[in-house]
Image (cartoon, rainbow over all chains, first blue to last red; front, side):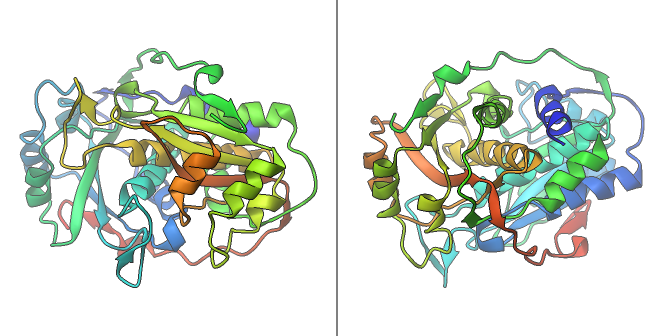
Length: 181
Length: 181
């Protein structure tokens, strides 16, 4: 199992150019199940997923992303756009109160879920890119999110048209320490 | 590839009971490489990993975890304790300024890295559990972290002695929405 899992982790690239090919329903289901089975703070599962295919909603979302964001065009180009959202005030909380100095842990749990989603997509031959730089409140409005639910990132999903090289990673000795920093 | 990746995602459980068996160095290297190849905000790779094996440091860290945390004992029992830390002020920033309403994105990127780590460990037959509920500043001190680096979670790592059942997950229709919420 390790060879395949490491291959998925190491070979998955951010995809910003998508082919005009639909995402099969079965593949989408598997990707949603990858989110479903992600671990979370005390199993709070604070994620809410909006699967956007409607071109009008995509246009509204695209208008919230600055053209300087290299993933901007992929919002319109990818056949599916996943808007990953969080129910606030659950992860990291106990009886309505925050339990750590980091407050709400939704960002951590959505990070966990995003990696599950991206790895499952890659394993299906599908590309993803995670966008975080845009006007979130405009996207909240386009998605008609209720109070207490916040969109955090946008993940275009589709078959890659072009796969770019891997951005350089730090060497292990640049970020790994033993016993103390 | 999808069958194996989905199996890793669905079958990985939180492990709180560890066998007295060391983690092979080769397995640890693979797990660190899983972190290394995780995507991050503009490839900022804000993670810092402290691999703790020294019983004295483990004792200091254990003292920062409340006994009510169900993972508390695993800090001492697991042969390896991974302290996942973040360099602050990089992820989500551009030229020293935050770029989104969510401020520093280190929690998101550490979530991504944690899922890579947990899946790689599971694929190697190793167990993990992610602890977030403890006195972080005490752990920062035990790890001798410099200013600007913060410990976020603790991940005991070792061969499972006991594997528990899966906590119940929401059905897809409880968190998946189409086009709008």
